[in-house]
Length: 125
Image (spheres, rainbow, N blue to C red):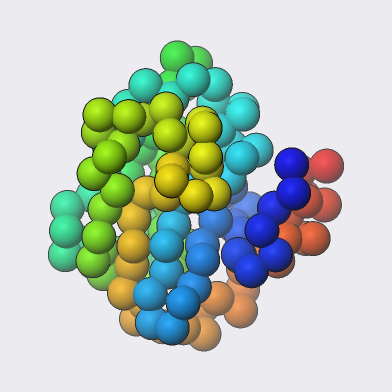
């Protein structure tokens, strides 16, 4: 798997795609592969304010339940409602249609502490 170079990654296996003051967040291909078939995604409520490292939701698979942590501080401005009826999108397209939330970033400098694609690939190697 090639990890998108424009994304940033956490050691907890979340990815973030930053565009201006917004950040789209999901779990990495490595995370979904480790979890197995995803059967349920708990999404946060719209307007939820999270701190970097705070709880964003959970991903439940046939093997485990895993917390999703926020890679950045901000406010949830959109959730991927399609995951309620099609949680398998997290497995099928973890870096695209399987995204979980869109955040309005409150502190863009926090992105400096995230991993780039090469560092993330070294972490999981």
